Length: 93
Length: 121
Image (cartoon, rainbow over all chains, first blue to last red; front, side):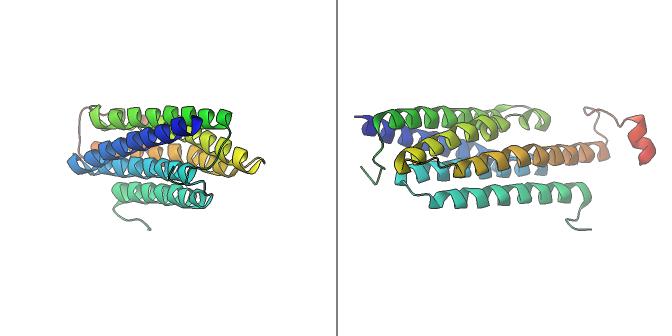
C-alpha cells in the first residue's frame, strides 16, 4: 500500500518538476532581454537537478547524486560566466 | 513496480510527502518566473525552488537511502549546501549585470548610481 503511494507521489512530483522546467524554458524563449534568458537557463538547471534526484529515489541508486552535484556546479559556472559576459562583454579579461 | 526500492512504510510515506512538497514549491517558483512583470521581480521567484524545493527533495533522498541501507546516508546534504552557497552569489551577479545594462541604456525606471559609486567610476 505504502509503495503504491510512493510510486504515485513520485510520478506526480516528476510531473510538477517537468511543468516547472517547461515554464522556465518558455521564459528562455520569450525573453524579452538577455538577462531574462540567463535567469531562465539557471532555473532550468536547478529544476533538472531536482528531477534527477527524484529519478535517483525511484531507481534506488546513489549514482544520481554525482550527476546532481555536477549539474549544480555547471549551473553556477554558467550563470557566473554569462553575467560577467553581460556586464563586460568578455568572460575573461 | 518499475524498480522502486523496498522501503518500510513510514519511510515511504515520509519520502512521498517530502517529494510532493518540494516539487510543489519548485513549480510555484517557476510559475512566478513566468508571470512576474520585471526582471527585478522575476529574480526572486526561482529562489523558492532552489531553497525549499532542494531542501525537501534532499531530505527525501536522505530518508530513502538511510532507510534502504540502515545507515545514515548524507550524500544529498552536499547538493543542498552547494546550492545554498552558490545560488545567491550567481543571482546577485546576474542582477548587478542587469542593473549595469539598464543604467548604461539610460532607463528611468531603475535606481540611479549612488554618489560613492559614481566617485569610484
